[in-house]
Amino acid sequence: QPVSDAPRDRYPRNTRYALLLALGEFSLEEIPASRREAILKQLADWYRNDPSSGVHGATGWLLRQWGQAEVVREVDRTPVPYASDREWFTLAITVTPTPPPTPRELPGSQETGTASAPAKPAEPSESQADDTSETGASSDPAAPAEKTVRDPPAEPLPPKTFNYTFIVFPAGDYTIGSVEDEPDRMPQAREQRHAVTLTRPFALLDREITFEELIAFRPQYAGFMQQLNAQRSDAGFGPDWYDSVGFCRWLGKQMGMSESDQAYPAPESLDKEKYPRETDERANWAPRNWPVDLSRRGFRLPTESEWEVACRAGARTAYGYGSKVSLLAQFGWFTENSGKHVHPPKELRPSVRGMFDLHGNLFEWTHDWYGDFTSEAVTDPLGAEGGSGRVSRGGCWSNAAASCRPAYRGTGVPTARGDTFGFRLALSPSGVAPEAAQDR
Image 1 (tube, one colour):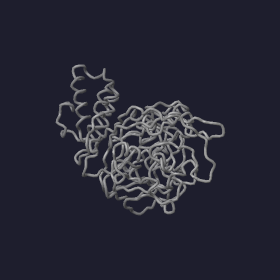
Image 2: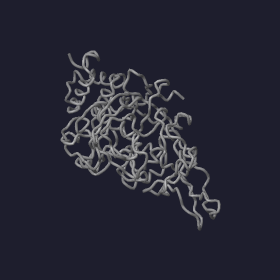
Image 3: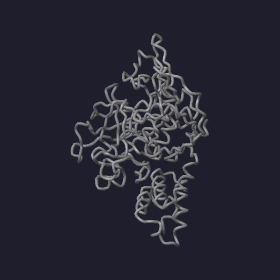
Image 4: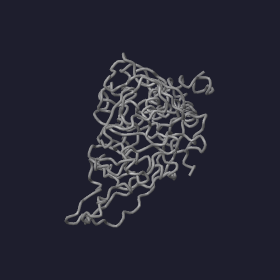
C-alpha cells in the first residue's frame, strides 16, 4: 500500500520523514502522472495536520521542491495554537514597521541614525531600546545642545504579518558536547560531553530571522543588506547580541505582550549599579548582564544547551543527521557549497525534528556567556556569570564543516556585527494559554 494512502499511524514518523526526503531526489515530473494529484493532496494534508515536526518540516520542504510553494505559504499563514499533542505550533504576528529616521543636519550638528549608514545599524538609546533608533542627543545635561533638527515624523508604514513556526522540545535529560575521538573535534572550543537536565519544555523557531523582519524592527538594516548584496528573504546577518535581544522584546510588544510576559526586562527597569551598562559606546544603553527569565513566555534567545539539544534531536553523532561530513551540503550552507554568501532559510533539508539551517548559513547567538563546559551533569544551565564573549552556535556560510558540528562552540563579543552572525527565536511554552496570535 502506498504511504500516501496508508493511515498516519501505519508508518512511524521517522520513516515518513526519511521517505519524504528521499522523494525530494525526484522531480514532480518523474512521479507517475496517475499518482501526482493524490500525492500532492496527501502532502498538503500532512503539512497542515500532522503533529510530527519532522514530517511537517520535510513535507514543506518537498512541496517547495515540487513547485508547491503557495500551498506551503497558505498553511504557514494560518495560526496553529500550542498543544501538548503536537510538536509544532505557528504564530501569525502583525507588526507595525519602524519608519526610517529622517534627520536633517544643520552646521555643527551630529548626523545620527541615517538609513544610508549601512555597516553598523544605529543603536537605540536606553529609553528607546525596544522600538526606535539612537537620536544622538547627549544624556549629559552639561553637554552643549545638539543642533540636529528632524523632519516631521515619517508617515506610518503599513502593517506586515510575519509567520513563525516553533518546534517544541520536551523537558528531560539530554547529552551535549563531543567525545574526545570525534572527527574534527576542537579541544580549544571546550566541547566536553556531559549530561544536561532541562526542567521545562522549550520551543525554537524552525528557521533563522530574515532581513525582512530585521528591517521592520530597525530600518537601518536595509543599508547593511544592500551594501553586501543580500536580499530581504535572506537570513538576516548583522545584529549584535544586544540588538538580537532588542528584537525579541520588540516582537513581544508587537504581539501585545505585557512586561510581565517579556523574558528580558526593559533596560530602564534595571538598576545601573546592579546591572552595569555595556562599555562599548555602540551599545551603552544595554545592561551587559541582561537577565533572562525562562519561566516567562516572551521571546528570547535560546540557551546554549537548548540550542544543542535542538540541533542534535537525540543524535550523539558529529552532526545532527549522522556522522558523514559528505552529507553536510544537503543540510547546511558552509564554505564548500554556499557560493560565499548567505542564503534564505529553508532551502536545504530539515532535521528529523523539522529544524532548518542549524548547520551553517549563520552563526546564531545564544543567551549564554562563553565559559568552560563541565564534565559533570548540570540542570538548566545559563552559562558563565560573565565574560568577554557570548556563545554563538552552528557555524556559517564561510566556515569549514568542523565549525558546523552541533558541539562546536563559537564566541563573539556581544557588540560584534558582521555578515556571519544572526539568530533565531526561542520561548518557553506556557502550557496554559495557547501560544498563538489570538491570545492577545
